[in-house]
Image (cartoon, rainbow, N blue to C red; front, side):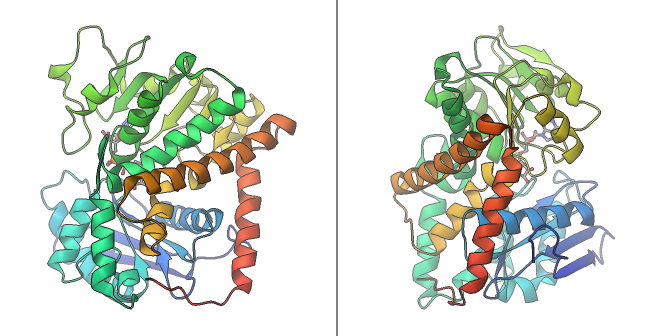
Length: 392
Ligand SMILES: NC(=O)c1ccc[n+]([C@@H]2O[C@H](COP(=O)([O-])OP(=O)(O)OC[C@H]3O[C@@H](n4cnc5c(N)ncnc54)[C@H](O)[C@@H]3O)[C@@H](O)[C@H]2O)c1
């Protein structure tokens, strides 16, 4: 059965007994008893959103041929709420049957990896990949490998924090390569400068592209000649907001939504879901959209963009680097040496996005259509393969 049309296996709604806040877990599918997907915290998060994201995880896993199904959790709580940590702890405690044996979770919007790991340590599960690590023949060795990989220092931060954004940067570079456009003349705008957007901007700037606009929850920062991305990112607070008091004088401050209307080659939504909608798509003046955010573009808005000749590299390819890499680490396909991780992700992402762009440039086939075909083909092959997953 198609991944996209299959009903999720489990939908759970949790009510926090202390605050009344709701949390949701959707397990779209299990492969060999395992599903993977992050945990987000956002005021207004709904079960519908979590279900879309869980399906997206299943597709992501299939595109990258990972031996695991898709899941996602969301808690309807502002991450800045002083009760957020306790709520997350109670949610994870309630989800123990899934976290113990079947569901591998990780960071997502509003929940950085160190925070979810702190919660896991508190509830006695050591690390958020527990369900997979506990299957290893030597779980302490696997745990050490996971810790070493996540915490390996690299330019721009720690490997586990930047790898997803590095993958988004590679997806963007593949689009630029397909256009055969010189990097130094390529302009980029990024909505969101947290884990994903910050690293995507950092690595695109490092590669030589001009990042002319960056937005966080407080507004858009703009410089037509390119922003000094590393310096700005260094001033971020724990919520991924850039310190306005430390801005250079020549950086313009614009309203938050202005980032979407910037005239650029590549626009990267890397914050909220449903950022580009039918209401604002007419303002978008980018040559391509690379989705770092999950469901960054609504289907209706994407149809308009496709009609206008603007390719959208879908989330389940562009942002899948974080999930794919976590599984490569668990499966022992990469270790703590960052160069191996960067090289594997670079080569997989450049190849996949080049393939999507080839179809787009040849006959206008939307990248999402080509990517879904790839996912379905891989999933069908995986369904024939009944090998158990070995975590070394
Ligand atoms: N972190 C991951 O590993 C990961 C992996 C895959 C996909 N994603 C997706 O990427 C997106 C961002 O996740 P993250 O982990 O980087 O989040 P984060 O919490 O680390 O950062 C979010 C950033 O977005 C900004 N922001 C929030 N609302 C905004 C708005 N309305 N306009 C502009 N900026 C706004 C915040 O100020 C912050 O800079 C989410 O959609 C998430 O699902 C994350």
